[in-house]
Length: 135
Ligand code: HEM
Image (tube, rainbow, N blue to C red; front, side):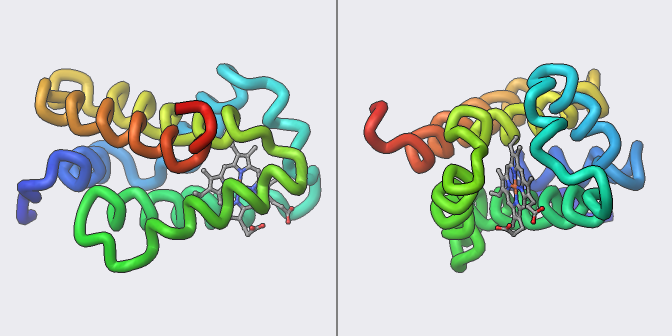
């Protein structure tokens, strides 16, 4: 497999060598850290929503950390629509930190200082996009 020079991309690539599907790990971590988030998903049919929400979020992250062709704009749009249906902005932002934490756990020793720094920066940037008034 080609190894990406972009640390964010590389963290996802490395994760796929250990784990086929991040979905159960990410949502378990989300609901442990933020139990109130579990009740926000419908009981029926939410498995599909959870999987596609994560896939779209990862696409937006890769675009934001990479070429910025446009997918990253989804973050600004979704923060507003989620707020309208009851997901507070800080919880929305926390989803990105949950993804980072999941990757770090999967990568373990392969989680490098460079990958860590890139994620720290990305999380700060996302926070700025999602809560422009706070900073
Ligand atoms: C912990 C934080 C979040 C919670 C609790 C949450 C919750 C939800 C829920 C409950 C739905 C389904 C609405 C329905 O049943 O129709 C949904 C849909 C969706 N979410 Fe999230 N969400 C979170 C973070 C995010 C993030 C960070 C993104 C992307 C940047 C995102 C993108 C989407 C998209 C694209 C959909 C489907 C389309 C839409 O309803 O706008 N979500 N989310």
